[in-house]
Length: 257
Image (cartoon, rainbow, N blue to C red; front, side, top):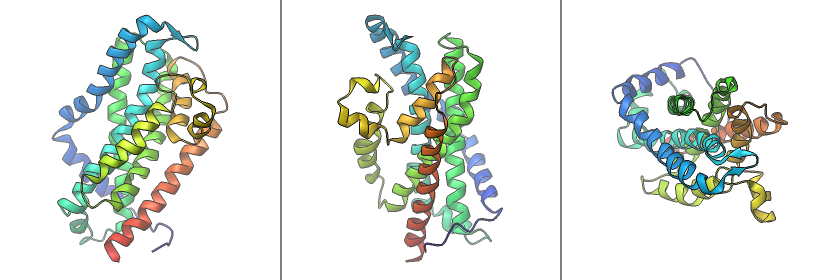
């Protein structure tokens, strides 16, 4: 039950299977994922931004856009790792069907991790195009944000798969979004600097994965290089690896108890 992951090349066909199914609804899926961040960007970036002016030397819409990009990646990976993965695991019984082939549960969980991160990249790529078209940022370093966002997607899909393994229904995910994702979004420097929060909340913010995601993405969007990038990278890698292992153990227990 607690053994290290036993992976084979069998995970890749599972990723491709999910991709082929998703392609049938690719356009509405991407539009649905980018609609909310774009509405937030327009409403707060242009509306509230006209009254705020600059934040940490940046126009507020640029400050907000760079943070919203990290949030959009995290949410896209989270939705896929929760609702879609749960549907395949519990409702459609897709995972059980796949295990009738020579593909183990470890491969399936790893494939779900990769697929959720991959799907989040379609969302952030679309948002980056919008940021470029609107002239919010046209820095060449924007492209370097893609591999960082890939890591962000892996991190949040791994965490989501932990809660997926614990869920007994879709309603369970409401607690995760209400008690985890929403507070994290407001405490991670997306909408305002961390320095504006009380000191105890600043300490909590430093251990949140989204805080470190924003710390990596924002400088790249504005044409700079992150200061001390190895710390946030290490934090995200730790969450991704630890989350995947915990998710794997809990999923094994769910299937083989």
